[in-house]
Image 1 (cartoon, rainbow, N blue to C red):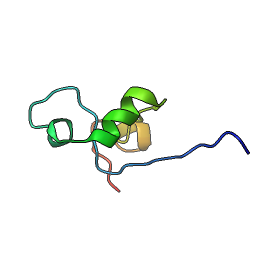
Image 2 (image 1 turned 60 degrees about the horizontal axis):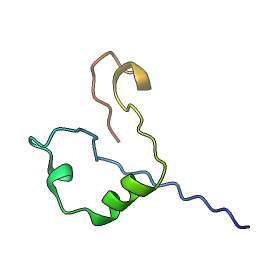
Image 3 (image 1 turned 45 degrees about the vertical axis):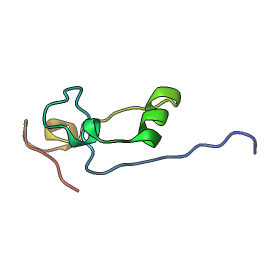
Image 4 (image 1 turned 180 degrees about the vertical axis):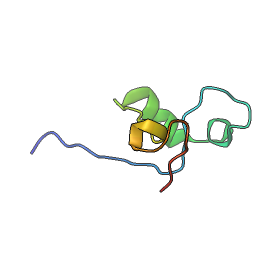
Length: 61
């Protein structure tokens, strides 16, 4: 088997381009920085109608 895939699910890390009040974006995260720059990834919606909740309601774990 020459091609391998790793599925990484990170619970509790929200994606936000703003630096304001964004601990993850302001933290030292060399591994995630490398992955986001060099590896294909996708982001998903985990709230509201996207997951069967009322519009605007936050999801949970």
